[in-house]
Image (cartoon, rainbow, N blue to C red):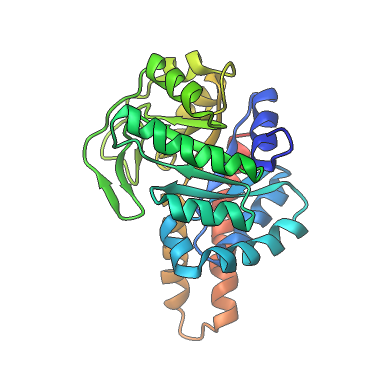
Length: 274
């Protein structure tokens, strides 16, 4: 998978002891905002629509919409499907030309998680597409799906999962959570450090709300990809409410205000992870 863009971006992050921001875009406006933020920071970025967003626009329509921005960007931009539990949808993205897909069968028994993930990996690699998989259960809300209780991943289980599936990146449950944190998360830095750069790139889900020190320590331990979703939604909706409060707001002015707010917020994450 050396020629795969997703893999190249993560390999470069590993070599430079940095991490790439993987941001859950919502629409064309946020695609433009995130790409411009990455260009301003001079850093690569991963655009990762959720399954809900993909179903809203359609696999091919979303691919073509984003591909224009990818092609014209001054930095590497990968297109990645996030948290997919639908093998048919993952395969549709693979056939269409997405750079990578993330499949999540972590709620299933280990053997079934491995079998389903492996099925997608074998299919994806025939098309030169990379696959990210999850081991352990990350708590919180992701794309409307609620996981009340976390199930931490172990080093032995994670390595077995990587080796038996052939995935290109792994997202182990290390104590982060999707959505907003209700307390201070206790992160398993040891697992990230043990996995380090010896296996496949380590992915951190649930980035929104982590303190700066937590991000930097995760990167120091070897995390190569950090996901940001809720933060973009918060900024998007906050900027929209503020713009709509103005009596004379015009549609184009509205779009520009929301895009500028999203761009500024995401640039801060992208620079922090560098």
